[in-house]
Length: 343
Image (cartoon, rainbow, N blue to C red):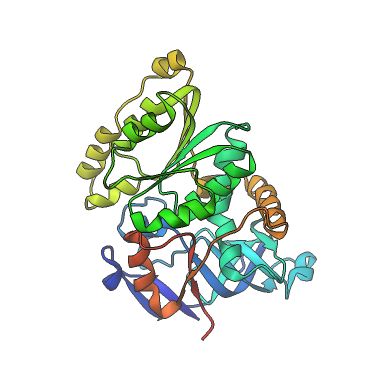
């Protein structure tokens, strides 16, 4: 089968090759084989390409967390009724290929009218957003949330889910070209971080210590800034560290990244009645697949009822993996990006 292999760490233009590799083998009773129609691209893939994601497999590696396709083989005959079903599947790497391995607990049958891109967005992006916003906290109508990278896949999902709860959304973006996208997606207050100090801007618009929840995939110095904005009872959700991309791989640069983030003593959180929450969807999917199963079912229902609108306009051929990765890394896209395996 054809697969996109990560063969070296570094820039997208030189890191991948299209290779012929064996089809995945079904070893466990719950294993299923998917004939892939489309594969999702996530920011964690960018981190893996840079050699900055410890959970990634060794080189040469096939990345990819989720696929849409048809079930063509199962290990256990008890699951043969899944054969021929079009499903959204979590893959835990291996998704950048014509055939991908998943498990019975990692697949969801999807409606015919749910296109590939929208379905893929529900997997990593919307699952992360739903877990962060609906499982890790209990926001109520009238709460104010701040979303970093609000035009990205998770940012898009967080905005829509927060608006369903009746929250006021402050969305941050690095580009003025994305302001219209943010507004149409439901962001109430748009702030360009490349030209404005977002802390002062937020405090000017809503007052000091008025943000009830902040969703941060950036890291670095933004963590301290975010904590200065949180209200009593406020929660900071940390689900990424894109700031780490600014420096090459290596223990020294990782150490300096930790220094930029800084230390927060639990006693300070106690005094301010604040929380810092880490969300790693890959870890959750590995340890608690039943939770992801329930979340995906709810998200598919919300999409079918048009209560959420997964944005996935950036579609590429598998032969264009370099351009897809490069554009995502540079922040050129909005919503979900994915690759198509159909010629």
